[in-house]
Amino acid sequence: MIKPEGIDTSVPSPARVYDVMLGGKDNYEVDRKAAEGLLKIMPSARLVARQNRAFLGRAVRYLAGEAGIRQFLDIGTGLPTQENVHNVAQRVAPASRIVYADNDPLVLAHARALLTSTPEGATDYVDADLREPGAILEHATRTLDFDEPVALLLVAVLHFVPDEDDVHGIVARLVERLAPGSYLVISHGTPEADPEGVTGIADEFTRQAPTTQMAFRAPADIERFFTGFEPVDPGLGYITAWRPEGPVVPPEQVGLYGGVARKP
Image (cartoon, rainbow, N blue to C red; front, top):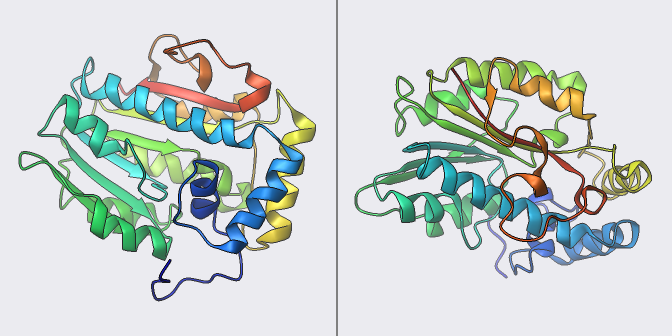
């Protein structure tokens, strides 16, 4: 794989490790070694990635269909794969408008090439960190109308922001900009179901990528992100139980908590 300018291949990237877990090819040896280390600690790590992706798809189908949302802001996009937000949303509603945000140079390179839109809709990409909510929102206004409902997607990204960076304050700034009728979608790692495995995952990732800190949070701390929002049935909980389309995977095998909620 050709390395785009600005990519450090000496340390693993969360987006590229996630790509490994999903069976993708947009990763480097350092990412594959990191994935191997994580799988030794938590053999279900590939299942976690697949279940997270499935939850994202179910949430977007609900939002574009039943909820009638036509605008999506996906922060912490990760590498483009199958069934991206715009693929799912525009299949339901071709006029959907999607803005992706990430700060990984490889994600940016692929996004520019692959995140295309239907003629009726639009897609855009913001090269910015979640810790820069103002910059993300400013750029997103080029494509999204924040006077109308927007679905804010924070899927498997908030646990990469430590408490000292005021993660709850960051989310509060983002949701404050959302109009009534908007939605918030979150999936977030929690240690509740498998404390030992989750702690091991966090320690291993930090060992291999010292600049990447993981902060898995208790369900009550995750629910704080939804303050002021009304959970969509069946409510907040483990994502495998949010409108499943098959047998429900036990929480201890996935350990991701969150859901979908509406701003009244």
